[in-house]
Length: 385
Image (tube, rainbow, N blue to C red):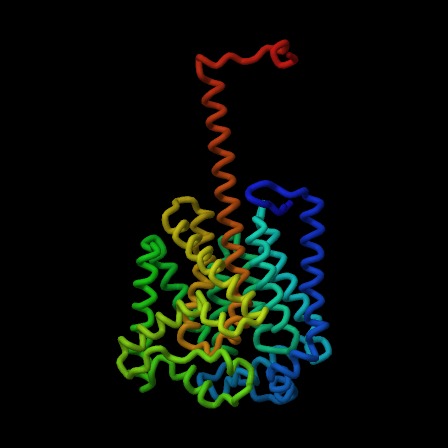
């Protein structure tokens, strides 16, 4: 059973269970309480409902126009029996499972890790209060965290994210491609090499966009923000280019800067709102833990720690691509909240592996001491006294 710990000291299992239960209850209630407000603030539900009943999604088509993301999302959501009335039920289920499953994968979860995971759960529940594409990406992540501790994770994540990218969000095709590339070179990964690889990925994307599309690397972000109405969702937290240039190398440098702006969103401190302060507090910890698991997995020969590293590469790949496409910090918090459970599943697997290795080491040390000729086994009288 998973238990909470404070500074390495375990909390009573019964108390841990009560805390987990009420945390799940709060996360599960948010979609019901927030649905009406979310429907007014987020346009996704109204847009998706406008496509219900229309046969406009051609799943096998190779043209983006015929695979309209909203039309295909509406087709999948409607096929699952969802509507504006049932959306909070689905949102509550997805929010709770994505929060609870990674927590229960730990043997002993530190209180700080628990609070960060719960913080993402609150953010996730707010955005899953209404019908949205995020419900579909949440299903992709749910399948992946359930497979995180098994060899089937790689195939599950790659296929589901690729299919989701083909049908709904096209940039997820890049996410799955980057994950596959990082997985192939995972043994060479260190913190410094990760930084170099991120820059190389951005240079490759900048050149590809320039040659194939005749566009700059951040053309999608720029287009969204140019068409954004003042006062619209995320308009206050728009991500603007630090370096605006037609040069591919400078575009890659700007994307790298954006990547770290997303990982450490300290610039949001100027707003001072509670929700933004919460996001600022949990995102850097999540990023550091994610990188730590990746590097530990690269250094280890233990198959479970290697597996943990592969799982952590999934949210890192997502973050890399978000550095190209995300238009504002609000949208980033919304989207990364969906994939963040993968970080905690990776951490849980790494922790279980480390605890198992420590137990094995203690058993070996005890066996070595007991087999030593200098070891005197205590008699029954000695044990009594």
